[in-house]
Amino acid sequence: VVSKDEKAALVDYFDVIAGTSTGGLIAAMLAAPGLNDPSRPAFTAKQILQVYLDFSPSIFNQTAASFIKLAYSDLKDPTA
Image 1: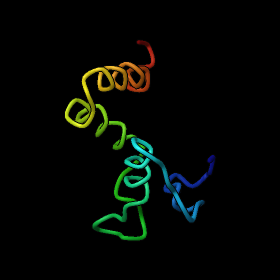
Image 2 (image 1 turned 180 degrees about the horizontal axis):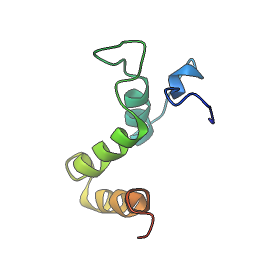
Image 3 (image 1 turned 60 degrees about the vertical axis):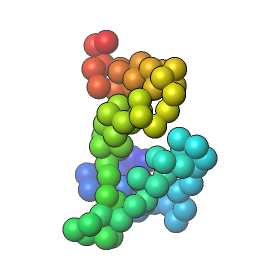
Image 4 (image 1 turned 45 degrees about the vertical axis):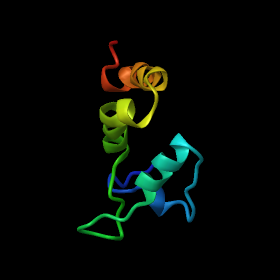
């Protein structure tokens, strides 16, 4: 979704966000209301990525956790 509004979020464009397994975790974080402003999401995409990088070893088995860190390392450092 491309918008000129820098504060726009996926919840501004979709009525339902869903997924299964890891997609369900992402969907929940994208759609969870913020504590200070319930009309805005609690997490940004960058924050969700950081949650995955920080907690994937305790959420997923080590093979999956290693894959997630490898797959998203380019997002943290495009020169990698």
